[in-house]
Length: 197
Image 1 (cartoon, one colour):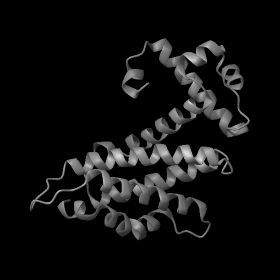
Image 2: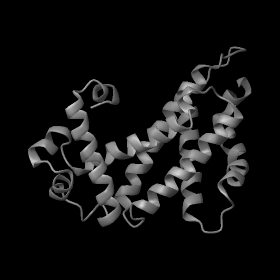
Image 3: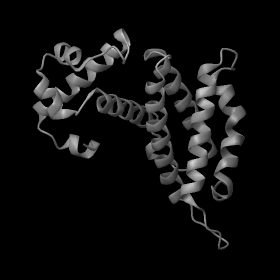
Image 4: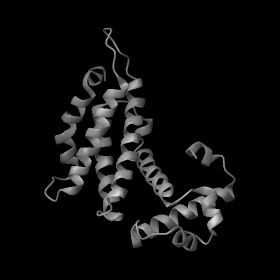
């Protein structure tokens, strides 16, 4: 179910979905994802299993949805989805990703590789979507064609990888300083697109 579909839902259905999501996030923090069951979620949310399954096929899809929504809220909080491409906005995106990845790893058991893989997939997809949105606003000139797919794929991998490195390392500089240091690497991944910014 897309976020547009959720917005069109009956208010009671939306409240139930929010209760499921909130209960899930609290339980993941308390118990970790692997030991968490659908029964745990339904008991915490005060719903029955049929209601849970009406919203999500299993706990893995709920996890995927929760990560997607959490990162989307971070992007919206920093208004990056309403911005255009600039070096400052790119730096803000790097900082946002670093902080999100670090917080997600802290809250959700760093030892759970599967959880980290889902975070990575969701965050990279949304980074790529945002970069495409930004680059589509830049007029191409001199007959140069920007491969949006390759450019944004490389940049989204770079941003996520650098954020994960920052999160894992205990000797990294503060996030603002780190973003300044890695910004040229990310800009290089964007290639010719940066020249038109």
